[in-house]
Length: 239
Image (tube, rainbow, N blue to C red):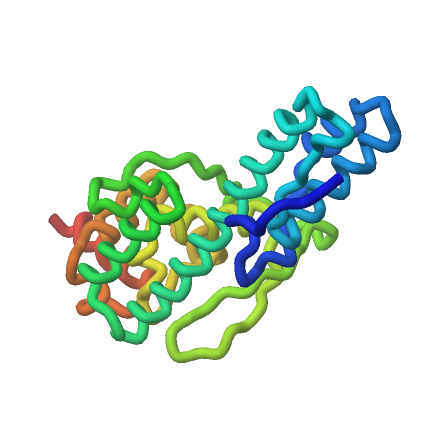
């Protein structure tokens, strides 16, 4: 099996890629041992080094090319999403440290979405009230479900929290739908979110987060996401 030129899959992080279970299922369906091994090598070589395979010697009909094209599409999509998220994180750091304005941040996000062909309607300034995250505020964490992830707050070095899958889902949800809220000096933490939901109800908390996200002066006039939610709810109650 020959190889051809390096392609998109080889990035600065090109030594890692996502190997989905469906890849294994497709490859294991190949009955010929030699051809099956060639496909394994082709996927690994493309995922790690970005090198396209040449199956003409062992498969002149082109069946393997069709199978590999589907796998290649998935690898490229996963790498594009990863690279997009990495660049977004750098932009968030610049916004947090006031190296760029919110308007510049939004324009960069749109540019990255086009560059990596990512659907990011949550960044276009529209009302953010379409979401579906289920977090049990009374859930007791199972120590066997804990995992380590890094979170960043302004002015502090990266630190690690042990988070359950439910809490990890919350972090991803906040980063996706409420990036401005998470850019405050004190972003909302999972335990704070649970506390707010217990006190005011989850729907009410989400409504306030949506309102906060759509405030252009949010970062200038507020520091703590947790305290701002409470302040805005209490302000409504006094009306």
